[in-house]
Length: 350
Image (tube, rainbow, N blue to C red):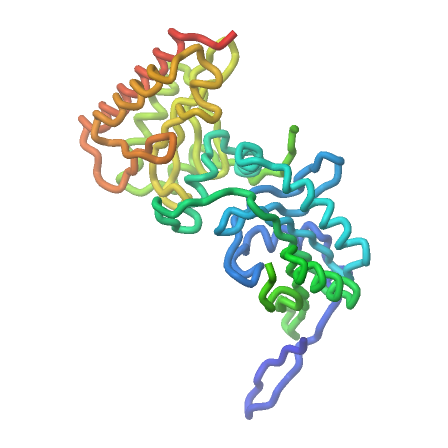
């Protein structure tokens, strides 16, 4: 692909196409795609759930994502030409991705986001703006995306063959340009994928965590007094706070194990400015504390009676989109403190 600027008098001036691999590592391309997931595939944006994900065979997936339908997407990046073995490697990664269930995908997302309280279903709904009555089933199918500066004829032909057999493969070719002033431009073109198709412990790199100061800078005037009181409660009672990419979790220390009570998020996060409970079946009280389902439901019912919480999957959320009164904040603080006492009273499962 050639790229031109239009000069004075309508003259075309061609930008200089340069080799990406001479100046940049693949990690740079990975970072760019990680930050710009909206136009990677032909049918919409992707939710990146993991980076540098280790497979069961010890190999590394550059980026792992989920699309709007809940299908898992493997992204393989090559800064130069795509060698013949790229496709075989991507198929191996897709075979690993097929084995992942919802909980494993959620655990990868939690590692990636540095947030052990993230609920995949709720995060996915918020990210893609999906209505609650629209059912999503995760990882029913897998997709492969290969991105390189040159997609070779062998890769194009074989990828098209696989698409015709019902395996969704997308190949994207990018070009890198430099202007006279040193400005860099990136263009990309989907070379395979525009045509319709016939149809254990996993490690992931993590985004940087936010600090308390940075978190408060992200809050609006409605959120600051609420989160100030929550964090003061945590400090005064020595409740551990775990900072994540966007927000934090407030925990209770039970025999050196930290049990999450709730999670706080700022306005710019997928969850908006809110407090989410951390008591649901996945990774919450039932999996770690010697407590019955009925007793957990009682704790959640108590939260709903404050009038501040609403349903969010297996959890509850308190959206802070108005000026909370002192009574509202007191109710929230008292509920958190009471849950902490409940957790300590029941203790860990044996």
